[in-house]
Image (cartoon, rainbow over all chains, first blue to last red; front, side, top):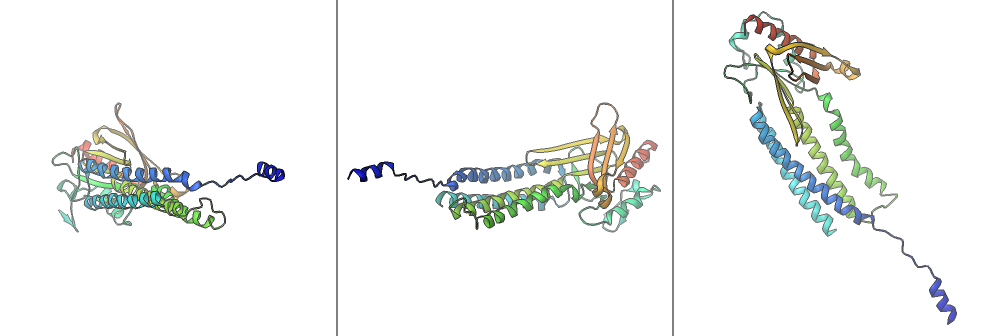
Length: 86
Length: 210
């Protein structure tokens, strides 16, 4: 009985496993939101550039930036859902 | 006067200067590096009525290699991470690998779009009255500067490095009178032709031909 108690006391049962994945979740969400913000800023920048210089084919560029904003929005939402629920 | 699908302004149609031939030669180069001469539709903020745009030139694609390298890096990064995870499972969760992949792709797309916009909007516009330089650095910064032809004192071109010799790109320095900004235009295609054009325009301006 005594031996059993001593064994219990001195047995080292440390669990050293650490979840690295959890640490990366918040920075990844922040980067996704940062990209979305940047895409929105690009969209606004083009609105100003339209007044500054109007080049041939600038409509295509505005379409490209709008598409980028849309893709960034969709990817960010999907990414955040995957990270949070995963 | 009409030539091909462009309209050459009257004041330039009877020019005997060498720069017209050089312009046509420059325009016939590859799509991404060519000069756009007498563009039909171009408007900039301080353009005066009756002012004719002679040339629009963009930075050579070699000036954007660094950005394209970053795009490639961000595309390859998650693939590399997935490969490493076969031997060392760092994150203990497949979700983080998927998240890394999504973030990398989004960052790569944004860098690529910014590079395309930088190429498109960073232009040097040469008119019969001034030189306009528009620079787009990123979503937070762009600049617009101009120098009147009458105030330009000296134009210098320099071709530097191995890449400069290989792709015929170089820098163009424009010195202006007074305390105004001096331009240093980097990585331009065929800088000596641009120098010749600006010098010819200054000369014509002084003689009152334009």
